[in-house]
Length: 345
Image 1 (cartoon, rainbow, N blue to C red):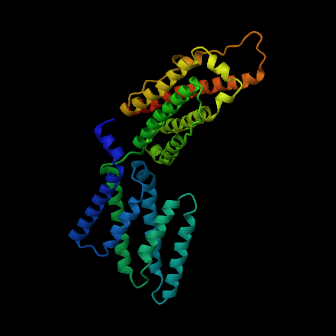
Image 2: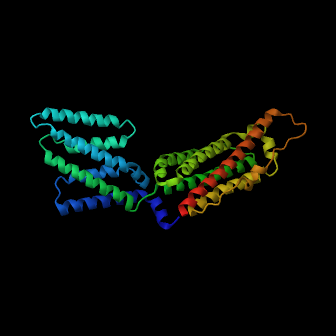
Image 3: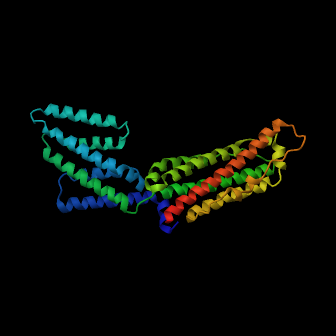
């Protein structure tokens, strides 16, 4: 990860504000140079268009809806001026009807486009039937200011949702390794205290919020990125179960403690988590295959006359959780490798 990407990740709010500043400055300059009437509506459009999403993926996902919403809203608003001026009351009645219809559609599939339609109708036709010239200028101002805002969002120090997404993946892996290592240490010293994994859950929630925007930037890797988050959720389930279950009170606890090489195998896996986290930062992923993970080669030990089925339940359950964690980790490393290989090509 280069210096700019580090800077962009840490200061994406500042860069977002800077993009808004550039857009506003350009719009103000154009208004002053060409003495454009009703220029305030161009600035209002910039605020609406740039919204609250600072990522390229967010801009791309909304760009078509913004453009079509503006065009449709402008046409609907201007069509109200076809009503003869003497029917002033009908203009206001139809204005209210089309605005409410647009707001109703905000609860459906193209919610954002419908919202832009409603806003544009209000901007264009809200002044009443006597103000046709103003309506035309408002329409023009909405269109050109929307284009300026979209271009600034895409080309002025753009912020990529995929960079933020994989930064969160790196944090998730690092924190998972820490939880797993702490669990192993406590279990080996027979001082087990359940751990709480809210930090991991918060990281997954942030990734889920970013996912729609990251997918827009992902190109042919859409399914791979979606799989990355899906595998992370499975890993979270395994780790949360491992670190929150009071294994020291389970009947199979002694068998778990006595199993040869189990602690060393788990520690190897914990280190693998931390290593993969650092590899994401460098964007050079080495895929981990199952035959490289020691814990997947450990076999449960049973005595020839061992009939203690109740202890076997927790014993084999614990082994399964660790082995499944290792399998999911291997899948995650291979999925990440595919993503970064494509980005490098």
